[in-house]
Length: 313
Length: 303
Image 1 (tube, chains in turn blue, orange):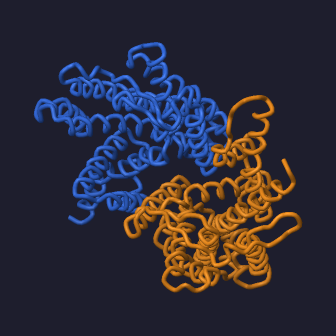
Image 2: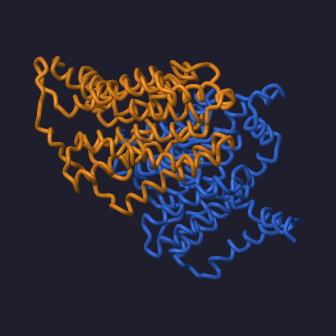
Image 3: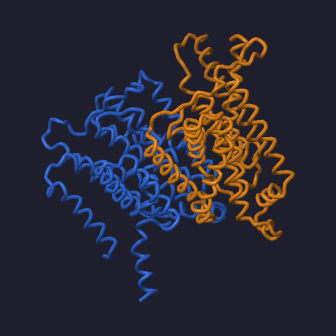
């Protein structure tokens, strides 16, 4: 096994042991659960970016997954674990439709259409108050009933399991011929077409799969909170996965994970010392500096240090 | 619907359209010369609005006289953003521009929130009570000034681009960067100039916005800028007439469509209000236009 695999396994073991070491610390577990949700979300966004399509409105799929799951769980009385899948599938369906309008568009245009779509989804949700509760939102079933002792711990382990599954599936897609096709399209669409890659098919596939996992992540988050409001479509929620992916390292499997963990910890830390706006200024600065000076993200830091050491012995 | 109301809505639309046009012209200019898109353009509008607010609050000179000062300040800031932000990443891929702009949005919005809190700020224009009679209705003088200001600055801009040496140099750079550089044009200086001018236009939009009685908040820039971006896509990237047509169309459509929908719903017996849909109209138009023509209405095939 190489170093990367070791790091992956040991961090997984650490993640498994955290509740054992810390005991049932509600605050810590909540932070970790949200971190896991965002690891799924960022990895899904990263998969779409791998095909050269940078979405600025992924909160739309996040919210659609959440609302569909909450509504079905409420009206049909199904357990959240089943409805989460339905939420993801519905988000994937909408993702395919949006992908269909986006396949012919270039980067900025696609960014605008996806951003606009999030605004439209926000308005539709807020206006359809008979279904969605309007601005007041909807209560959503908890994944595990609050009456179970230590329900938060079970929730944490479930999220950990699902995150591992999602990340492994995305990793397998990235490693497969599909992932190669995505990268070929991103590097040069025309050349990819010449090589016999069906560009439309793969772009749509990227959109659908990414929307599915985003919808699942959204549904998981709202069943964790127990509540959903149109705030789930906020611009910030579209931007967060982008920030995590860029700072961690775009187009890699470990980038979104590392980025989510580091930025979330930084964010929580700065919030604790009382920086409300300061932390966001800080995150904005990090984003700018990473884009300019570290275009491959934090994951490229070890390689950079190594090459620096080699060139200056 | 009576005719007075219709004219009122048209004027509202013209007024909103002017703000979009001022933003869109700046975006278009920067895109033309540098081939980059600054999604943080709205934050320059926001800073322009705040600059006007503070200068007016402390000096009490006529707010319309503050506009040139706000434009100058934002022009200088634009040069800094170009030098320190967009210059280093030019040519490294279009996604990077989007990401850099995101960082700028976070930085500027929260810097303002930190410095001046998120309270809404507004000023009262000294002309806010002046109504100009026009036929059967009376229009606020501020709106007329804004419309005239936009027309004058568009003409001045067009003259600058067509008649002066730097204007011609900028047009040359936007047509062919390499050839322009070979002809002895300092293309990097043109980048700076385009960013300065574009930012100054955004500042003018922000100043007019706040003078006409709109609230200034740290987050006010996001939606107008994104709509201005929709405007230049609908009109075709790089096309000034396209931006004017699309900007005015959007301004008017935004104000008239929800009303028409309301009366339509009323006729059909539905109890629905479409007033909240105002902000989505730009994106519906954008999506429809792009589905039909992926390069925008006036856009060229290649770029």
